[in-house]
Length: 400
Image (cartoon, rainbow, N blue to C red; front, side, top):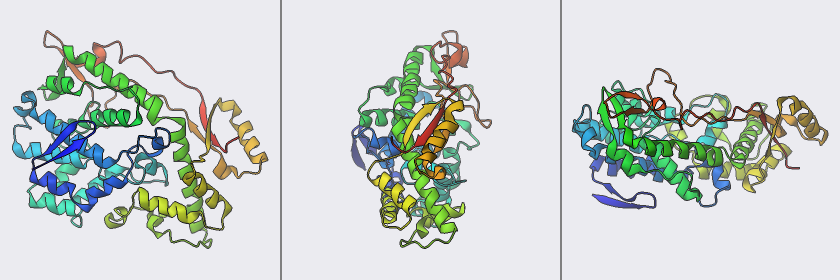
């Protein structure tokens, strides 16, 4: 039907009418205005790619998975409707992301995760996406369940939501290419070519283990060097503090010049209705921040200027026993430590997570030459390596 040229995968063919129609909805086009990497775009100058491109890439990889005869000829993927439903889930899996992607989820207190809003957008009769799915005989609830990892047939979940799925393969490739780093050159074709289904599990032969180890190491390096970059964290915390001050002013009835009704549900800690949520994107949020630059409140104005001018709070690592002394230093300089000082745990990134979360089996299974199937950690010394446990805290404070 049409071909899209992608800087990561080359040609992406759109052959299903429902996919073509979904891409051209206003809800999906909104993803062109949602930055994939949030704060990391302020570190890696080429990393301005969007959720729109990523979602197309995930759709493309799900399609490639389903072209593998080992997948195609096995239940539930031997059914054409199931195959199309999984492709739709791959395309729409991030439809519910808010401004600056994951950064937005750290803005409000008790804020709902993007998967919640993906489900809402897909299942709400008010959206064009829902109407298109119903028209083509695809159950919106099943699509939403796959995205949330709740589909009754776990194999339907795993192509879109697991430790080695189309989502992770695409974002690792796409983020590394656009960030200009080489930590994650994943051999996607080799991995997809060797995938098969055994005992109602997605399984890889032992000869594919080295490509999977490279994928897991690439993910480990990307988290440490890109996703957990100190400037990305600093952007998130500065954005959070801007909203914290705005929320305080609104709740306390302070007079404001601008109209901030767009984020009122965030202030109240309530769910957005679907139409209000779809008004949120990077552009509308930046406009709110630009508006705040002209308010009378000095703290709100300062944080707005910090975001616009890339003058985020600084990050520093310190031992727990030094935290109070650092906080006192900030207070002595005249800063309100409710806003100009914050404390977070330093993240510890694992190469491979062997846990089964919420009853959902996301382990990566390897089959040896004798046909024995075990979790990859049974065969690989690489994935069992531990990151260093860090008994340190990250503090956020004004520069200098």
